[in-house]
Image 1: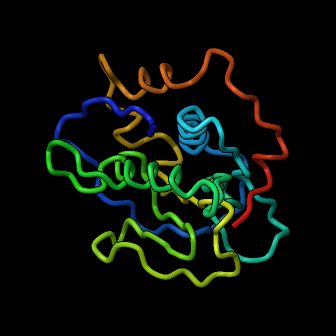
Image 2: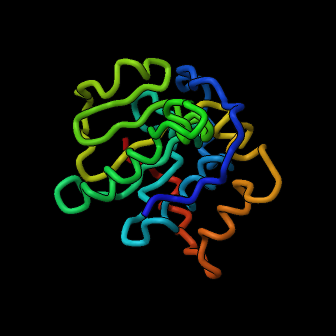
Length: 188
């Protein structure tokens, strides 16, 4: 089952603009950590493959700024789990806001199973992805800075049934403690 979302009002964040890597600070950002925990609590049979990536690795990646996460889900054996989360992230809310959870979380793009979804081009839907990795053994999430810093409505709209309450209810009383290396070295 997908994560639980509170009943937000009609106010919603704009689609995250593309903000590619510009610096290097691989420390995991709070919004990415919280999203990781939310997903792993909802899908305990899956795992984290990391957030941060060291600066010496070639290529540009939001992993190097601590604002990308690789979710360990396999297209062949766990495709139904991935589809469940994607359907939830890209759902329209009761106010008619398309892709509401993804927008509220500040997700910039998602790569999965040879395809990519860009928030800044949401109307084009999923398009072919031809990068080095086909992303069939994991799903990649990159966050805009607002989402990475927990400055989006998912985190800032408070009150009864707030996202903080939903996260607290979704996270087991003894949350998994990911190894530091698992969240320091991501795979894109």
